Length: 336
Ligand code: KG4
Ligand code: ZN
Image 1: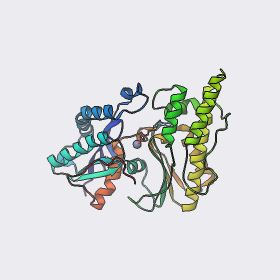
Image 2: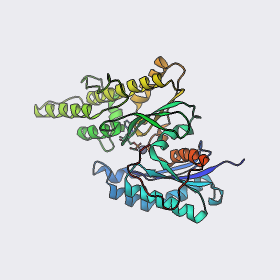
Image 3: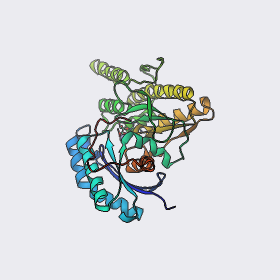
Image 4: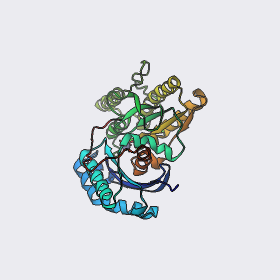
């Protein structure tokens, strides 16, 4: 039987991306154009600017993805696109492009949830084994997702306030590192020590929810108080202390969830999955506390937003025959 080839499009935030993925597990191409430079001077993503960049880039990015994969439109089996969650204007560019391609070439149109995409990025590394647990940590989401089988998502815990990546980016602003701050704070953390002992919110509570606004406020207050007294604090120790608090809570709750649900695999997903401290701590926790559980962590290229992960998630929907008609719309607040 010939292999299923899906062209996938992702434009939910500030990366314009197109990919061709075979059977949901092999990346034939994955082109990602980042707009970060255009947003940096504003200290965050400006939705209007994001939409404009997507419109300018999308045709070229799709063309490049098709050329790199070496496939023609006739060889494609479907077109997949992120329908949400994300910025409405940004999502609409991807959705309109996917609709146009589906219509022009008579291909099925498959809507994909962005978070499902992050989880399925792991399928590009390793076959998934169910039941599994996924820790999704990105700029907009922090969730523990239990999966009994392909395409079945049960959110067992989530953040009550800031997402992990969002907290990183906010404290990054206080330390004066460029947006998005996560990567810079991670690098600084490795050159400092956890000396500030920031709070580990909700770590003792008997649930799988998270809260990162407490550690963020504690961090900001510590820096402001020192500034008012004319003191200078060690930036590397501040970063290390913040990271230790975030990683401790994420790892602790994840280990508890994995133990309770007795899963076969633990997947790490989302932009914050690139965090070196988190990757190391999770590996250590699985080795020492979770006997028999396989940990899957995507390479850095598949942690941040990209279309290959959308193609991987779309394959599950394709097999189930789930497809959309041309009335498909962007769904900015879509949940799993
Ligand atoms: O998944 P993603 O690309 O976009 C969303 O769907 O939100 O995640 C972006 C987030 C940003 O908040 C960024 O600061 C964070 O991922 N991030 C990191 C690291 N690399 C990216 N956070 C901590 N450590 C990193 N190494
Ligand atoms: Zn994302």
